[in-house]
Image 1 (spheres, rainbow, N blue to C red):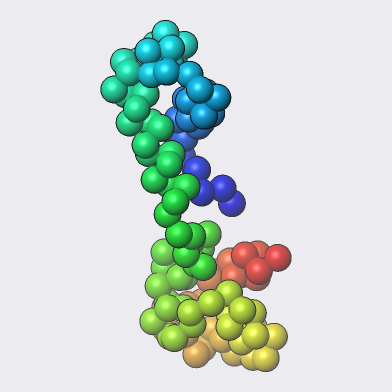
Image 2 (image 1 turned 90 degrees about the horizontal axis):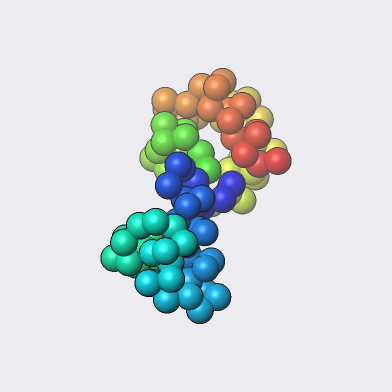
Length: 110
């Protein structure tokens, strides 16, 4: 899954790519029809998002990731090992984690 998800990112990424080619904010204003300050904001948002560390549980739903973290899992590898070792028993060992969460984990590990 891309870290640049959501409605705003496609446009932000276009502005960012153009800026990386050497275009000035004034040129970006003319191309994208927004003020230079907005273009600068878009570029800074992309740079900030790119520099943000990716968390191991980022692609999971909050309920699933919170349940796993509360049960002491701190990496994708540990979860994979637990599924290989315990299988469906994991559902009963992790509070607030049921069959839907288990299926989500299986998809996530693929």
